[in-house]
Image 1 (spheres, rainbow, N blue to C red):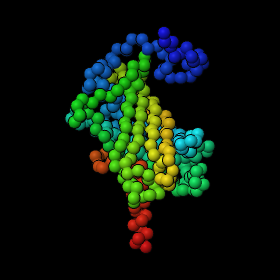
Image 2: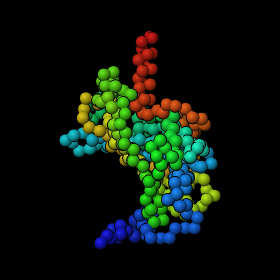
Image 3: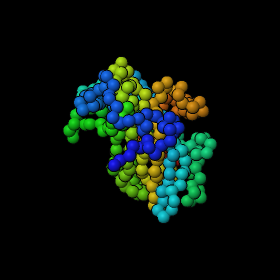
Image 4: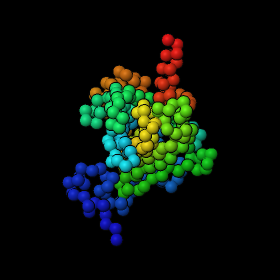
Length: 300
């Protein structure tokens, strides 16, 4: 017989947690709760959770710990990663087009300071840190796709709905091994991204709200980052992050981080207005930086 999870949690801990774990799973749904078995209502509920169905921009913040996993060794916490994403969801046939850009800053785990260089514990060398500047990162969310109906997955957690997406990735590496031997070990880019987004049923039931308070998690496994210059070493990176929608926009960011982004990455404080392609990743952005420097050196 299964025992409820709350049996293993102290009352004080339950009070400190959100409704996600400590509420009964048999509570009646509130009046006005969308029918999540209906594909259109499900998609609308998901976009209200992660974005805004009115077309207004939304900001999302994630705080991440990045762990290095080297074969035969205990994993090491290497650095932090603070991400600010800016999204706008525009209506299209059968759903919404997400217009998105994101900046990610690697940070010192102890001080929280943005890193300029990173001391590699395996090679003993200091390398320049190239931060994430992905613009754009667009994606359509529609009821129907080329592969058939698209259904956002979710769990009913009592008073809370937990939406989740698992995205395995494998595609030709934008940094081919022969051309970038210091930065990549494989001609294929292989990784996986895992998303959770939690929203209360009470908020979902309020149809007057086009954007809902949301907290979530982001996890990822992938190869060493190219700026780490570890192509000759086996292993991979594991990312463990927490995320939240910034319902008050930039005012919800800690002042030091907000000031740094506004000073150095002002474009990323707002969402795109128009669709552009192709999408950027941290690897394609790194390639742009590396290729631009090589071109500049060739001209000098």
